[in-house]
Length: 468
Image (cartoon, rainbow, N blue to C red; front, side, top):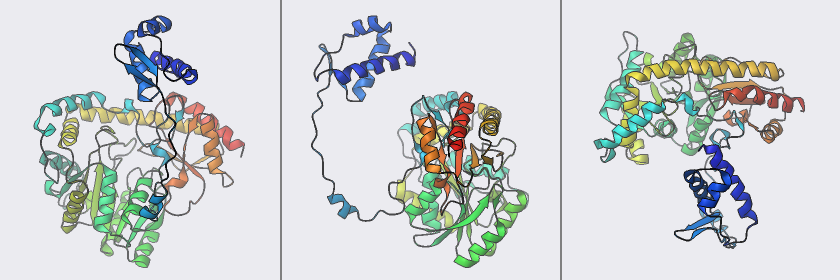
C-alpha cells in the first residue's frame, strides 16, 4: 500500500485516541485491515507511527492500547540560569533554513536539495560496499583517508593555471561537513576577539560559526556581483584584520559569482595585507550557466584557505568536506580539527569517495545542471508573474537560491507569518546579514521539493505583499 494509506489511518486513529479513555483497546489488526481496505503491513506501519509518538502501546499477544499518560509535574530549571551564565554568541538561535515541515506546505525556505536532485542510486550502492569493507570497523587517519585527500587535491589542481603549484594531498584535511570547517577555520586562523571581515549579506552558518568562535565580525558590503574591492581594502586598513570569509561562486544568499577581475583584485588585496581568504566553495558542483574557478587555484603562497563540501551534491547524510591549507595554517587547522572531532567517520569518507569516483558521477552532475536551470527559471517566471512588486537583484548562474528585494515599506515578519498561514514557508533575509539588514529581502530556494507548486507559492507571496 502507499504511504498515503498509512497516513490516512494514522490521522483517523489519532482522532479516535484523542477522545478515548487511557487504556482503551484499539481494534485488532484484522479489524483495521477490513475497515480501511489496507494491507496488514500498512496497518502495522500506522500503529508503529502512533507508538513512536507515545499515543499507544503494544502488548504482544494481547493487543494495542491507548497509552496512559501521567500528568507530569512542572520542572524548575531556574538553577541553570546561574550555571550557564550569559549565552555566548547567538545562543540558541536557529535558522529558518533548518526547519523540517509537513509535506503539505510549499517549502521555499530550505538550504538543502530535494531528494530527486541527489544521486540516490550511487549513494545506496556506496553504503552497501562501504559496509562490507574495512572502513566500517577501523579508525581512519586524523587528516582523512589518503585516497579522499588525493581526490580533493586533484579536483582543485585541475583548475590551477600554469605557473601556480597545485595543492598536494598532504595539504588536505577532511572534516565532518563544511559547518565544522568554518568553525575550525575561524578559531585556527583568526581567534577569539580578533576581527574577521565578512561579506554582508552572507551565509547564516558562517555568522553563527563566527559568533561561536568568538571572533569580531566586520561586515563588508556585497551585492549581486560580489564585494566592492575598494571597500574591502579600506576594511583591512581600518581594522587590521588578517582574514576575510567569502563565497566567490554562487554565494548564499545573493547568488553572486565573482568575475576573474574581481577575484584577482581581492586576492591581491589579501596578499598585500598579509591576510587569509577563507574561500567557501560550497556550490562548486552547482553551476548552471557558469563553471566556478576557485580563487584558491590562483594562489600557492598559502593565502587562500579553501573549503569544499560534498553534502549538497552527494547526500545530506554524507557530511564530508575538506579544507585545503598550506604551510603552518594547515597544521593549525588539523590541530583544531583533532581537538573538536578527533577524526571523521571512515565509513562516510569511504561512501563519499566511492560516489565521486564512479563513472556515473559526472553524468549525474550534468543532469543536475539541467534540473537546476529548469527549477530556477520556473521560480523566476512565477515571481515575475505574481510578485511584480519584488525585485530580483540578479538571476543566479548557479547554486540554489534567489535573493529577492521587497519594497522598503514591507513588514517582513508579518509577511513571513501570513505566507506560512497560507501554506508557504519562506526564509526572511534578515538572517543572512551579520549587521543590520539593508532592506527587506527573501531568500527563496528553487532546489526544494515540488517545483510544480512554485506558481502557487508565488501567488501567496504576492497576495501577502499586496496586503502590506
